[in-house]
Image 1 (tube, rainbow, N blue to C red):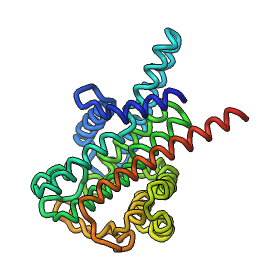
Image 2 (image 1 turned 135 degrees about the vertical axis):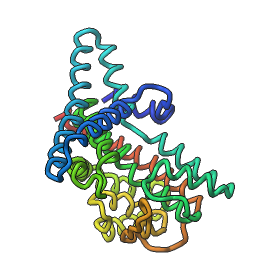
Image 3 (image 1 turned 60 degrees about the vertical axis):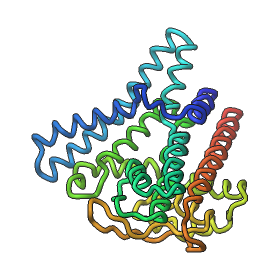
Image 4 (image 1 turned 90 degrees about the horizontal axis):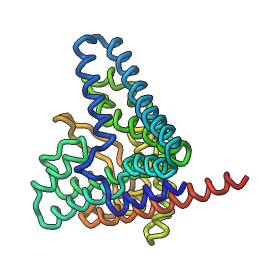
Length: 316
């Protein structure tokens, strides 16, 4: 458990080391190589779906197995080496500081009125088309991304760390990376990415709902509208096209008094998502700061909750 706290503190202080080797980049390279090779021989829908299942199983198994066997080997050499090698993968699995930095870059560009820069920066963290978005749509995109990734990038990794340590946390990170790379429902990936998308939905089912509850508690802690946050979770949590993303988005929308969802363009194609929340006020750039504060509060509450549960279970 001590390693988990160290991993979280490292991310809180340092964030993702952009210039260092990162397990996610290695996982991403494997996915790219697999896809390029398989598309040369698999053309039909059934063949691509089978290939996608193989990709999903192999990526998650390799990610889990690599960390597991490295830790087993290091434990036989030195407890200090084991401590370090179990902490570092967990540190790599958390993305709180990175979310904070990317969100603030966009907020700064919006405040300065630099719309082209804000659109460009947003395009790095969302899949939607950003070239024609106005200030409110850009701020909405940031808030939606930070709320969703509070679950995917913080709460879910913590959930799996406390259950199965660094190996299971890295396996979750592999699932998340698979979904972000091939888990689309467009013509290119509807078959090849089917297994990855389904496994991501399953892996995030519990963490997404825990995230929503942590955000409600975080809203209370920060003096935000926690009652609306809880009400919107119950009312709108299921409305999202994703079975999981709607819960943290609903909690954030209620806490901030804004409406999320609506029309977005993806690769030039209009996609209208159900709206989440009440339009109590228009979305502004400063709401991004409120969302980041809510992310940190949820992170702290979740870490304390999981630690308490782990201590209780160890005492039984």
